[in-house]
Length: 86
Image 1 (tube, rainbow, N blue to C red):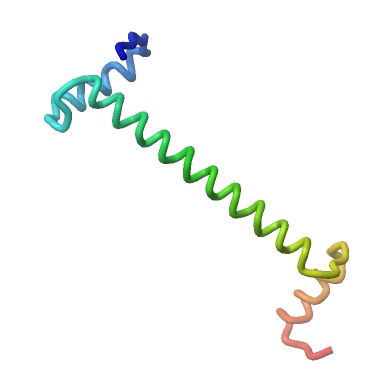
Image 2 (cartoon, one colour):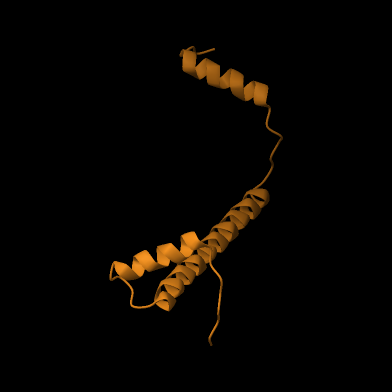
């Protein structure tokens, strides 16, 4: 499938630099690689989102939980940091 796109000058210059470096033989190769990397990033983000969703669901199923008492957590942290045993 042929597709024509307009690019800002900065991106067109970047493609030209990639071609001039010899790493790619055509602007289509550069764009194809960029799109492949974008697809890979999107897939990685989707997997990470699913992993976090599953972890959240497992945590919710794991048993009783209570709201976090931030003041108690701070006090415990200060107690541990100070080295006291009370």
